[in-house]
Length: 294
Image (cartoon, rainbow, N blue to C red; front, top):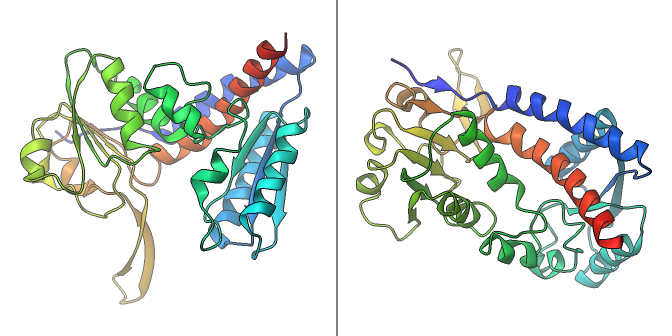
């Protein structure tokens, strides 16, 4: 029997209903929300994302400001924009669009975002506090993974989870979140030997590498829950011989869905939940700023 498809779009829509209500309640209590996004230059993908953010914020009742800087802005100019937003009491959430210009160190600028306004959860202070179970704001994608696992009603206590990819923003925080829920976690990365031998033991397999088709049927235990975080653009040829681009994950979806118990599609899985988690974090940030000021 083919796997259950974990519908991230449907989960995101349900979350958005809850977020609208929370935003209304905060507004009625005198707390208006505003998300400010800093964008350097005009990277096409970032511009699309920014327009999507603006639309979604409007739908949720959240104010939105896009702070666009020239493409040749240096670290000092970007840091100055962030500091101005930190000091603005009308701004309750800040995010920094990637990519940044060559030679500009992203982590050093993320560190400048007020941890209480860091809606992406990428400030090193927030990443570090994940390990203590007390982040002010946790990383969006890692939270999205947990939300998707919760949707399957999987009992994580004692389950064997394998996380492939140990990046600072996704893989490592996900591993910690799963450990905190008393799963037994195996962390795999670029130096892991015999990857399939490790992943075949997983009751829960989370893949966040950025390599299309990395996970095949031979990597998956029958009945496992598979969460595919990868987003990759590949070029293929259609039935008429035309070259087309499409988005795929790190998992060979069509093959793996025949053995897995549940699986996220790409697109339509982790992505929509991550974007919506940014809005949930914007609400959480406003609440914590308010509590801090009282």
